Structures are given as C-alpha cells and as structure tokens.
Length: 210
Ligand SMILES: Nc1ncnc2c1ncn2[C@@H]1O[C@H](COP(=O)(O)OP(=O)(O)O)[C@@H](O)[C@H]1O
Ligand SMILES: [Mg+2]
Image (cartoon, rainbow, N blue to C red; front, side, top):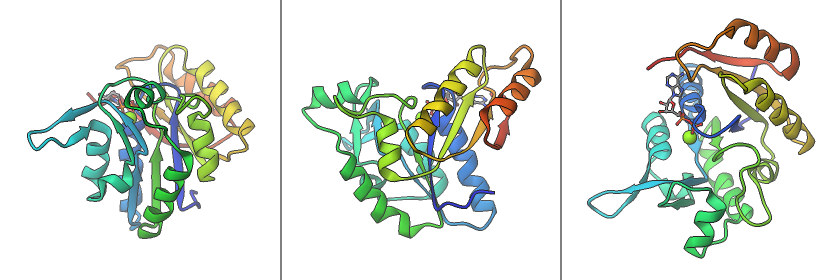
C-alpha cells in the first residue's frame, strides 16, 4: 500500500506514540525485506553520557531498530532541555534551517529503500520564528503518516491535523491508531469514526502494550 521512499511521521500531540509507531513501521518494512532508515531531524531533551555525548531517547529507540551509526546525519539538531524546539534553539543561539534538514535527508535517503522521518511534537510545533513542522514536511516533500493517540479528544485532534496536512499541500498517506491508554471507553466506535472521516487508510492498529 505504501509506495513512497520516505514518509513524514506526525502525531495528534507529543507523547502519543510517534516514536513507538515509527519503530513498528520500521520493523514492518524490515519484515518486507526493505532496508529501513530513520531520521529524527529535531530532538529536544537529551541525557549526557559519561563521554559527554548528548543522547536523545527517540534517536536511541530508532537507531536500535535500524542500526544507523551516523547520528549527526539522522539527527542534525538536538537540544538538552525537553522544550519546544524553537525555544530550545533560541536559547542555544541556533537557527533551525529547513534547508539543512532537507540536505541531510537527501544524503541519508539513498542508503535505504524506505525512510521514516519523525517530527517533534505535533503538526504545528514551531521550529523557529517563521517555520513549523508542517513547513518541514512540505520542504521534504514527503507523504505524511499521522499517529493518533487513541484517547478522549483524539477525534478532534486527528481531524484538525488531517485538514492541516492537506492544507499544507502534503499527501496524507495514512494513519496509525495507537492505544496510549490501557482502556479507552468506546474504542471501537472511535476507530470507526476516524476511519469514516480521516479519508486515508489505517496502516496500523497498535494495542496498549505496557
Ligand atoms: N501502544 C502503546 N502501549 C503502551 N505504551 C505506549 C504505547 N505507545 C506509546 N507508549 C508509551 O508512551 C510514551 C510516549 O510514546 P512515544 O512513542 O515516545 O511518543 P511521541 O514520540 O509521540 O512523543 C512512551 O513511554 C511509550 O513507550
Ligand atoms: Mg517521539
């Protein structure tokens, strides 16, 4: 069903399972015999190891699947505090440049059959004073996969995000239903509502797995 070499992964919010779902997608692609690569172009929130390396949890979880070793290529921007990238970048005196990320993607992508680019936060998470995640997805020219964290309020968040993806001129390739909470009341009805209104295929349905 998926045809593109690369996909941009966004979510209905932060902490709703973008990385979790990206790991599942990468494993699925590997199972199909594809060489799967990942990018986390902008990561905020790092631990510093004994050698002084900045380690971001998402980056570590993604490279644990793909085996990527060039972390500067897959993650050109990383910041210590777990705050919005545009604020973290301003505090660090850095400007996050879309061209830099596109250039990194263009060097990374040819090494793989399929690449997942995980955004930070949701679709309108700011990257700078002028740009949002939406602009990055558009600059990369990648179809978008929306991870829906299945909990109360997700229908509104999902439909707003889907509309915004299309308004940005991006292809809405599909969505992932990710159960981030142990039990969502009327879960099946929520799935059916999303299936009906999102207008894109449900690619994965991931149960709560503590
Ligand atoms: N289906 C799931 N079942 C159980 N825990 C999950 C599930 N999806 C995500 N989580 C947990 O929720 C937290 C946030 O998920 P994560 O993938 O890091 O979100 P995001 O990338 O959107 O910020 C993580 O601790 C993750 O392990
Ligand atoms: Mg993540």
